[in-house]
Length: 97
Image 1 (cartoon, helix red, strand yellow):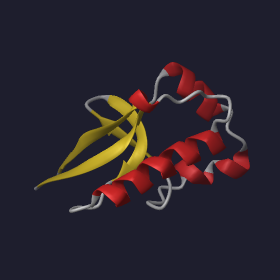
Image 2: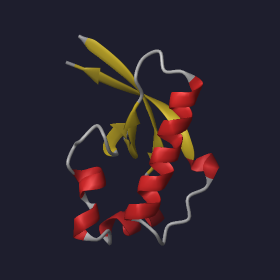
Image 3: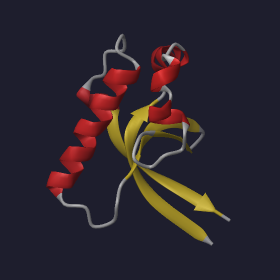
Image 4: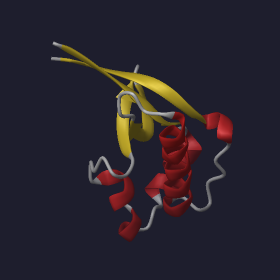
């Protein structure tokens, strides 16, 4: 069975990884607890992406809310990381099993 999901997120580059490694313990719940309300780490085509799964049929307003949420959480967990708009992309996550 093959499942595919759209993920909106940011590739974890060395600078972002360093910021995540130094994230305060009380903020790690925003990406380490596998909670769909927050960010999750996905492996897509061999690279790690920090992001959220998009719901099917999402309208533009909801998509914009997801975008704001991602930027807000990254700013909270990695305040020293300067996130550019162009880093946030939509990815296809494929699960085979």
